[in-house]
Image (cartoon, rainbow, N blue to C red; front, side):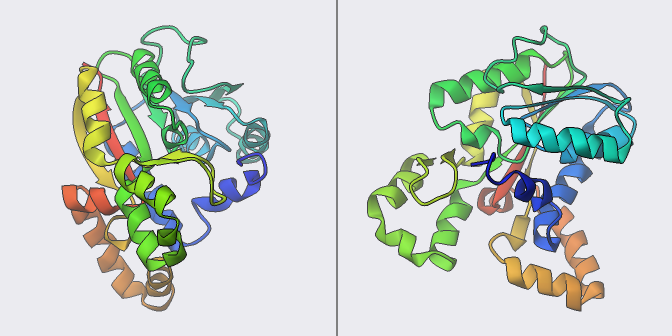
Length: 265
């Protein structure tokens, strides 16, 4: 899927104001919790949108992804941004197997944009979570964002009512979060916040915040874009409101993507 949609994935986070909510909100919380300097692993970082932004802020980055075409774009964009000296590696590999890295190798670990959601098998997904924690230093922040299950159900009602008629698929997503790629999008596991929080707590990390990245704007793409373009004063109030409400548990639950920030103890 991502081999065929590689340039679309590079543009996705900045294609319009609605999609920028995911990127800008993530960057807000990265700035809040990252150490002032250090070596960061961007695991499942795709074409490098976050890696490049953090390199510009002075961090050293290792970017890892499973898809060669995304890594090809990342290398080009890293050169274009002139941050090659801060990107210490662009590596092909899976978040399930970080054996290329020693224990406690990184000052922070990122797994953003739903990379973990694309592991449908529960045991493999749990192994990936363990790996992300293993390679983080003690007291290092770990940032994991995934695709939210409730937002997918809401979009079935709002945008894709025909999906409700595929009862087996819809009920499986509703009841388990598992989607096997039947309707075109890549196979995914759609998370509930409490599900991912519990998995992290079982591994002894401390949850710092859970954030709804699109927040209250979730599923309202056209109206969000229209507000930004037509009502700039109103948008400023909305952005302020978004940052004040995005950590509310109910808002995180219904967000298209949510971010969990935790700390390795």
